[in-house]
Length: 601
Image (cartoon, rainbow, N blue to C red; front, side, top):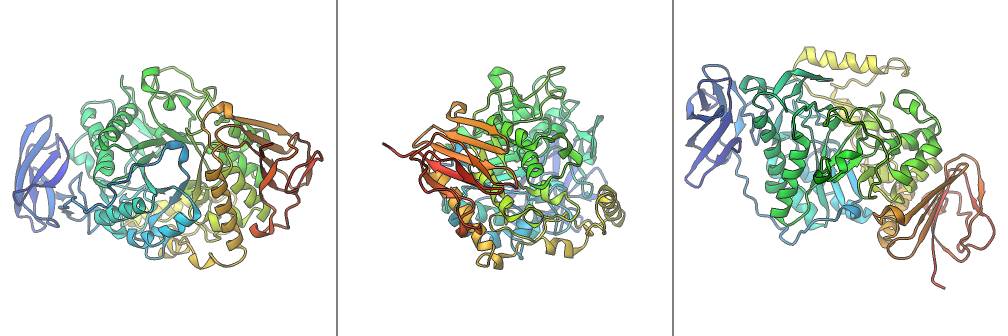
């Protein structure tokens, strides 16, 4: 069954609701007039038809209880507690020629629709897409856009998982945005949250066992993936993901915190979800990539199902970020404490992917995980910043505000010249100084106070002042990108650097060759070198992860310089490296990096 309300060709709507905790289910108008009586059809499902058109408002009533939004509502124009709206999902698409992007070719750009522009809508974001094309990225990754309480939220408090945030422009806004991306050659990935539901507006437990007290997570009762009725809960999420790919032309998914799933079933839900999306990709004739945020660093999730894995395409690699951050800032508190030898850890991350492995593998009882699996270089996404690593700092400060400019440029070089899939966080490409703060717009005063108290307690030990109020509209406003910086120093120089690095990456496929044997990664003191001998001309990158100048011995006489992070065009003091290498040691300045290309004899 496909949950929710869908228009038919006869001027009516078909309502499908899974409500095993009810004896009687009806679709009601906002003024409590029956729109459709839903008959039981087995397995806890109820179905019926009623007169409706695009935009018709309705609630679902269980027995004689309160009127509730449809669990699979496509639109909540008046918020998470308001009436659901019928949506005609047909759309005049212009992307018939779109065939998607191969995994190794992705250069990802993570953005939050609500703060990417001052207007905070899909349409306003679409008007900035030409900037992303000019920058050179290939993929827009949207932070969650499922319906959340209020008009401003990071997106991880979603409760209307089938509905598109109304304040962003609703479902039609997302369709227009995806169509605009494809028209410019940009893929669209979507961050989805299936591991928990937000604390306000979650009416799913009134309908059925969507959650279970058999397992517990950081957010309370776990999503029911292995208990009674779990086949319908799984179907609810799988159908949701398929809808985004089918009806909104989404090209990929980033699954939030998959380590938070508790699943003792024989066939893991995550395996089932990935298989369903890959099957849909075959039907659509274009890739639909499935990417995980995986706090346990379980490489088995990237193993094919036939070999006992979960069959995911790729995963975020927080270890890469942590090593970069510690090396460039010296911070060693919290989870950074495990990265004491940051240069060695960073070398490990560039060379093989994960740095810290281990811990129980949560989908196969008793098995252990670790970094030993040899991964294709298009299986991990690396970054020096993202929404979590910025926003979960008390003041939401970006790397550019507390790292030296040269170190900030080095971070760009490490990410964009890495053999792994690179990702930027919005504004990073021009050294945005506005923070990205945590913000919410809950309607429950007690919940707001609990969020305020939780944030203050979390950061009390290392913040001198107060944590910005997450419920204040000003907190969201402070997080909006400042597009006026684009042409101003030093931001314009940083943007030039990012464009140059992306252009070099695209024009020299040896850098992103996914084969492990194509990349030789070595460390000597503070220097990491990466020699790429894959597709096309060989390239050689040298990174000085240190505030001191170094002279690097090499055997690359005759190789030609492509990029030097110290170039004045990028805001540096001037390139110290020779344009063509001879037999002399290569000088690299503090936090410097340089990329050379082998020239034919």
